[in-house]
Image (cartoon, rainbow, N blue to C red; front, side, top):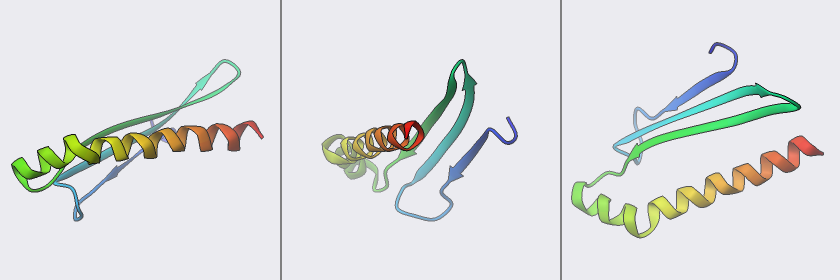
Length: 76
């Protein structure tokens, strides 16, 4: 939806694939922020292991922090 969403797509960088959709949806009483991330770590099988051991957990922490930070920013 123009004006209400945008995408970060990695062309060159640390991931084999990185696609991050950001959406903003109007809801009753405010807005809803939407993040959809598709990614693939590099290095084949080793990247799969690294993802299971720490990459996925690190990304979840980052997005959980963003949720809290946006909530604090928008509610103040």
